Image (tube, rainbow over all chains, first blue to last red; front, top):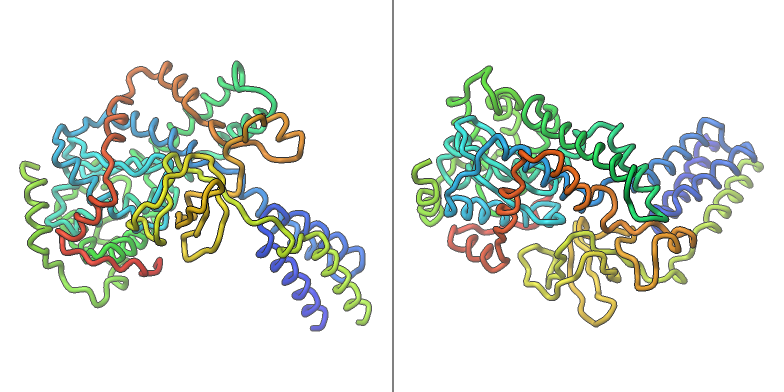
Length: 306
Length: 168
């Protein structure tokens, strides 16, 4: 028992040092701790390895795409999607979507991205939406039709913002691409990129875009990620002052309209009825949406003809 | 058992010896990792803007609150709040006279701005994939909503923000 207490004190010392001094020193402290610990017989080799792993993980967490990288990935993913889905030429609708969406993003845990959040309606009857990394969000006409009030539309946009905040798009990139990208990044220390490095990087970039587009269009995110996005959307909606029941009401409408076995959300998202069931505990105490007159008037104006 | 306690004390001393004391450490600084950074009067994206900060600018950290840091510009007394996600401890831009080789040789880390997937990579990608619609993406990026417009939008829609709502 005393041995356990001793090890806990050692781990606590490392944890406090990490907390006070940041990640850069994690690995040094963990290495010193585990090596000295084994040498003196205070901890076993397995325990030492465990401490070492914590240090390694903290160091490796810094090896990730920067928001600038994410921005270029998001632009290319969106340009790829917009080759197949036509942007709706309805400036008043797109301005309205950006008013709601950019305002909601201010209430997320990631209120700013490298290039900001941007929203666009696409002319498709499919029930569909895409959140590309960095904050590029497309919503189809078919999905807009599932919204009977602004609170429902806000729920759609908050769900997509959540995917950006939670970096689900970036997580769809295969490890092999990121390994190449980070290897080239490391090789750039002494020279400007060019030649073979640029070719390698562009290949990794192309592969990354393909991974994300395939996920968004065909395979979809995991059920867990979709549920996380619904949960986070509810938090954003509550913070902004919307009634989060808007999400439930939108899913009910989607359940009536969706063509099971069809394209879009029918293929890439869990069934709307299942999503609705899962969020119910988070909506306790919220009444059905009774739209504010000002909100309903601007919603009706922007959505006319959809 | 005495040996175990002696070992623990030794290890704890070793760890602490490798850890600089905060009292003598330089003030903590962070770097802006968004293109158009903005220091605000309060810890909210709807707070009034106090100053703009450029990509890569280094700021001193004064305090933190939830997902926000209170920061101070280094070239003036201007201080205010920025989202934690807009700041990074990693070097983003090099100072005048520095280059990556010197920074790398001195044991510092590579400056991140423009590294990895960047405009050059996008140009290569565009050249190989001419059917993609980057023009629509450029148009999409032009729609920007100001803080004032957001505030008016909330007010006109009868929305009363509850900004303290914790993450589920």
